[in-house]
Length: 167
Image 1: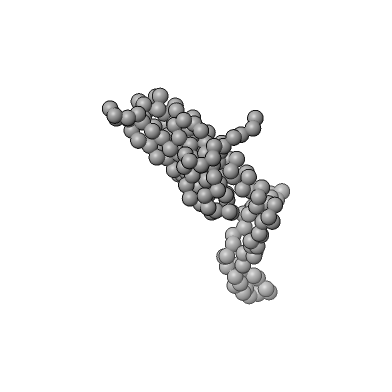
Image 2: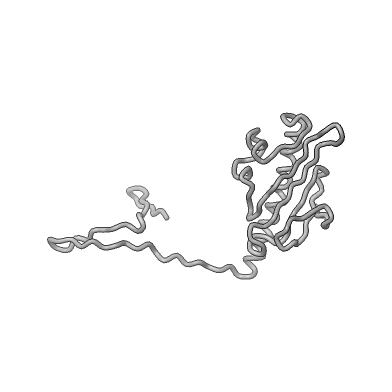
């Protein structure tokens, strides 16, 4: 918490001992931080938060898919990258490289190409806290098709419904 005054900006120190001068003597007193209240979201606010998080997660899946396509055609020499490799090439930001954003966890599974098979890619996103940060889980593969389903916090897969986004 920061307070702005005409003389500048002052940041309060919480939980420190303050000395109160009363007459010729002083008395130490403990300064207590203001009580923080945890406010519960209304049902409507919770639904809006989940919609926001899910929309952000879909956008993040598209970002990851685009970053993977760029990585595969350049540095990857035909193979897909991990979150760390994508961040190292500055294709995604460092926060996303940690594997979370918008109340979701992101995981990349990839297989490198071999003489018998082409490289493959799967990206999944699951809510960090089911029904609080999100309801649906998401899946995208190298085809670029996003699948989504309410899996109660478990990973989505290619058998789940295809996301249809109206323009």
